[in-house]
Image 1 (cartoon, rainbow, N blue to C red):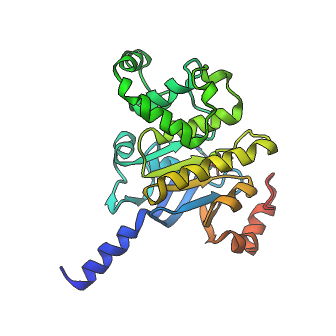
Image 2: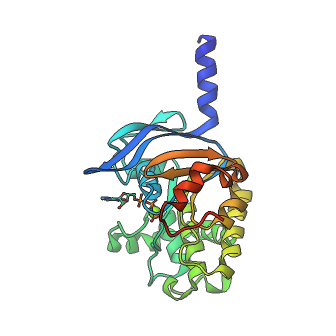
Length: 272
Ligand SMILES: Nc1ncnc2c1ncn2[C@@H]1O[C@H](COP(=O)(O)OP(=O)(O)OP(=O)(O)O)[C@@H](O)[C@H]1O
Ligand SMILES: [Mg+2]
């Protein structure tokens, strides 16, 4: 192996995820526009941007929920651009959703266990899933461990998920995403719909996850609430109309003029 090849291999090894010219068009609209981003292994990044700037679409491209119109995605040094969602999950990419995506009539415990068995979201055959449920008591310990890590209230583990408070439901979703043993976890607005008082709870939960998994887990968090972004992330990526307009440490981004302009351009969010 030449010296150059060695250098290239070791540098790509530092990045768990890389996108190169990633683009998604919906008819005339370019929702994600030529985004090239390297994500360091074990890091925690935030993706921010006004409504409709392409954040969720960017996640959908990484997870394989949507095929890109152009560009490439590399995970752990391998090109995964054309792999199915299922294969990407198997390789270690997991996500939570902007809109709560739990099984409301199953208990909190069952929701995590079903996710651990590879049944995620609403896209599963419910009967086969229930059949499986009885066969997998070995997941018990894993479920309890994950519930503790995300800080779910143990007294509510056996309550139907629809009946637990909203903040607990959001933590449950993080737990479900962790149940597939990801190495890259994408959280889409984990504090969506939460009151100001509940926000510290979700910050604590994400920090505990990060502390527990250390460098074994890389996190990308889409979030509007700036106190969460500032507390959690080492680096912020800013999307505006699908383009990556800035990237850098939180303090720098807060003062970036292009970012401020993007946020002042008639959207309902404030960068404070
Ligand atoms: N499946 C789709 N078909 C057509 N247009 C879409 C689709 N998904 C997203 N879009 C459009 O792409 C753009 C980016 O949407 P996206 O949901 O990625 O934004 P976002 O940054 O996550 O916004 P928000 O902060 O409101 O969640 C929007 O204009 C949206 O209407
Ligand atoms: Mg979104």
